[in-house]
Length: 256
Image (tube, rainbow, N blue to C red):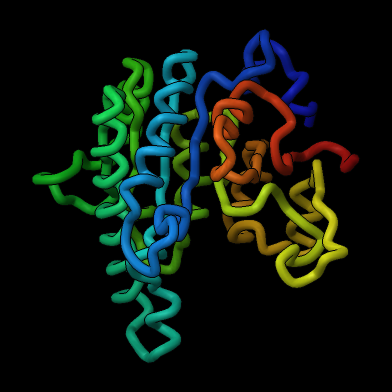
């Protein structure tokens, strides 16, 4: 696959200035913690909302998938003896809570936003319908896609990859607390080196713990590039959407 940063005018790729026209932003639940031990930090939501608002002002269509790990993790609960499916459903509900918090922050920044849930809860969110989600994006609304895939045993990384493919996003951004994918955990290994570009095959073969391997496989099968970057650096979301070399790019081309 051609480097997305230079694929000007390619269908499904960035536009003439090297920017993406429609993105899927995956935010972990832990990213919403800020300095808290639990829950949602409103300041972090505002920080994200302002970056997304600036991106919308540039004309980029934005869909967001948010995790729920700051409130509940199904896998962790299963490890302690809870039924895995029950734990995963509880985790999906946690993502809805985070989605509503983000929606509130975005609307305070005057960004028109819709929350769509894979689990029916009509009082607080629209049901996820692919064509409706795409219509919201075309109208300039930010769409927050909550409740994962609506099925247990699938991570929110996989949900993000699935939704990105469904809505025709040109890239999936994974916003994290580190500035890319490293050869080892940079907090434990001072010699760890950051990758600028990786192939899907490298991530799968080396089992790099950047995101769920099912999500990587889905992106590989649909030729959907992934960019992993530090969302805590101001303007990184906009810079990545403009095609600037931020974080680590994972795609189907040759590694460099």
